[in-house]
Amino acid sequence: MQSMLGSWRMATVLCLTLASACAHYRVQAPGHAGAPATEPEGEVLWSLAWGLVQEQPRVDNCQGQPLAEVNQSTNLGFALISVVTLGIAMPQRVEWRCAKAQPSPGELGALGATPGEVN
Amino acid sequence: MPPIIHPSDQKQWQNWHETYSQKLELLVDVWNANASQSTTEGYADTTRGLQELIAKALWEGQELRALGAGWSFSRAPATSGILVNTKPLNYVFPAPRTHPSYAGSREDLLFVQCGNSVAELNHFLKAKMGKALPTSGASNGQTIAGAIATGTHGSTLDFGAMQDFVAGLHLVVSPERHIWLERASNPTINDDVPQKLGAELIRDDALFNAALVSLGSFGIVHGVLLVAEDLYYLQAYRHRMPLTEGLWRAMDQLDFSGVQLPGPAGQRPYHFQVVINPNDLEGGAYVTVMYKHAQPPPGSKPPSPGSKLTQGDSALEIVGVLTDMVSDLTIPVMSKLLERFYGEFSNVAGTPGELFTDTTTRGKALGSALGIPLGQVRRAVETAMAINREYAFPGLLALRYTLPSKATLAFTHHAPMTCVLDIDGAGSARTKTFCQKVWQQLTERQVPYTLHWGKLNDLDGARVRSMYGPERVESWRKARAALLTSPELRAAFTNDYLRTLGLA
Ligand SMILES: Cc1cc2nc3c(=O)[nH]c(=O)nc-3n(C[C@H](O)[C@H](O)[C@H](O)COP(=O)(O)OP(=O)(O)OC[C@H]3O[C@@H](n4cnc5c(N)ncnc54)[C@H](O)[C@@H]3O)c2cc1C
Image (cartoon, rainbow over all chains, first blue to last red; front, side, top):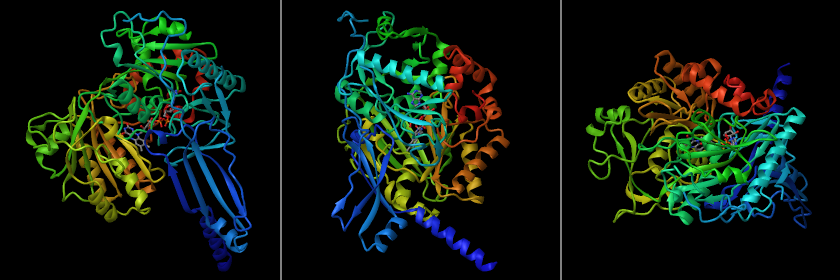
């Protein structure tokens, strides 16, 4: 009974550890350019054969705008896969947020309005 | 051209500080079809796109909610239905034509789409109009619609909260109807403008005041008409000062007669803020004051860009930055880091946009804010400090002040001035429990207070009614029913948060 409880505990600790990110990097554009337009989108990307084959993220949600922020993270699970496969397979999670457009100002009411009328 | 409505694959959404996540049916980003040029046609097309989303929600029997920056700690922006990300909507229209009876200057007006962040507004107002916002929160990532929806405030002694510089709202309330709403007592926009947008023009003080702090429940705010000010500079000082009777009087009643504030003698500050580390009272409180000027005063220094904490930062930003440095923020570590990074300074002058600036922290801080009338502030702070002696938490207390807001459900409505007591700590069960203990004690001691809608709170229908009084609550609900005219529409713009608050 004792040992079963012990292995449950071990398993729980292991699960929690595996789930938690052990390395996390964020690159964010400075100033108002870093104000993101979107919520984070992400993918797990695999680097295979010691980096010979590298997956690229499919960024299809930015509507032509640049990225405001990129996050890269690995966790113990990913690290274990890398170690067990001797670096043949190295997964990591990449997330991004798109930047906002920077529209030029418009004139409100210009839709067929008579210009020049003030106050 | 219709807007781009981009569905995401996500079935789960998390707020900025990752204090909760919410399962949802659909998250969509809405982009103007032509994102690079603000045009009335593009704006009108996007209005129709938002109406189609409302039609979809009604058709599918889903709830629908507009999302700003997701900076709220509360579940105000969360929905299990359709979450509409409005951040990409950032058209700007300076100086719209005004109503013949409008007494202000047209040049101060700026009509903006809902997704403009405070940072973007600061930048645009300064660079293109030579103007500034009269007030903002301590940092600048909120969208304008999101900020006003929960009543975001700063610490300006001569102004209210952010919704108090709003003169008009463009609300999309149904698949067939969108409304330009402003006060009857202060008509601002020329009637032509709403007409050109195809919006129904309603001038009504009660409806307008209710729709300002809407908690996202009055339809989608598509556009906001702001009244800005000529660009100004704030000359800032921060000194650590002992908690003397004079300083207590300043904090409790804004009576500065018994205290020598940093900066030019005898001048009333424009901005006054006190940060107290309840675990280190020996060295005194951190008092930040700012004086308003048309130009940077001679001899003043500009704010240093890129420093971890800036002159305008308040407790939440401090805790955020410190928890970023040290993941397990213990009390001694907190006090040490605070001393090192939240230092004293004198005579630094910058625009509001330079002083109340970016924060990049997330995930580790948690905040609650109580609105307290003047005269009750000392009791409230002493209550919190007494609780901290029994149940110490690694966090800070901060005091900020605003004039009472006209918005029906502004938590900063206490006259003649509302003091906001921020309680900010590491995102932990201890911080939550600490806040709960303070709320409970204040209730037991009959100290009147309200709670920030966008921060940690434990409000329910009964507490909301006792805090705001049944009249305010009923007038808010009546206004909502006047704009969202069918039960189906009201159901669509409801979420769990609103139901918990007894406001649905
Ligand atoms: C780091 C940090 C610092 C903060 N500092 C301060 C401060 O100094 N002072 C202060 O008062 N508060 C402060 N807050 C709280 C914050 O200002 C509020 O929670 C604010 O509402 C967040 O704005 P948002 O754009 O993130 O909106 P969200 O959190 O996304 O949404 C808030 C509400 O607005 C609604 N909403 C958003 N957009 C629309 C729209 N287009 N139409 C209709 N409804 C909409 C949502 O449905 C929701 O009900 C801070 C929060 C953080 C995380």
